[in-house]
Length: 208
Image 1 (cartoon, rainbow, N blue to C red):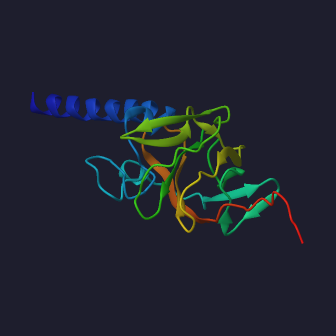
Image 2 (cartoon, rainbow, N blue to C red):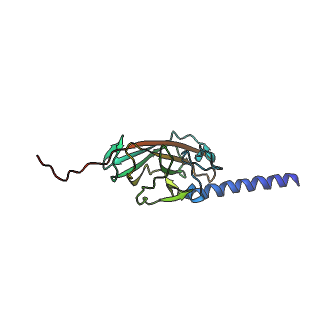
Image 3 (cartoon, rainbow, N blue to C red):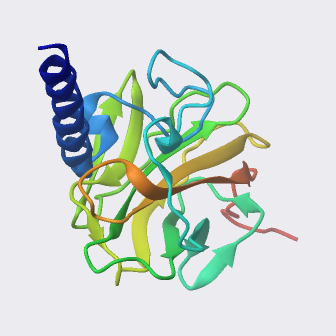
């Protein structure tokens, strides 16, 4: 009887993990979780280090991921200008991932000094959504992204806040092997920061 009971518990846990993994395939913020590694992460009970690693681990696919900011075709490396429209670009690669594999991500933007939410996102691209968790906005996948997809481009407009303010984008990206549970996946957490430039001056006229 005890042996049957133990097997039942083990089976139930296995099924639960599988369901949990499939449920999160539509994005952790949909389930009320922030896992970007930002100081305001809330998994499972608001630890500051909450990332996808809270559940996923064990994979090794030489995965890499970057979050970059572009203005048109030009990559931004320093100041951002209030009111200008930018593209936040996520670039990702992996080696040796099974055919059933893919990836998902979660991205947020915060004031680096106060961790205040900066919801300056434009319309998210197909397959992603802007979701609100604990007063902060997260862009994330709405379904598993195929391994052949190497970039996600998200529109973002620089807000008008105090010059010199540092803005940071926090990204968590999870490469999954498609086995319907949380084992054998590789998580990457990274961030990128930029400084708010002074408001641009506009000459109304010049008299000599």
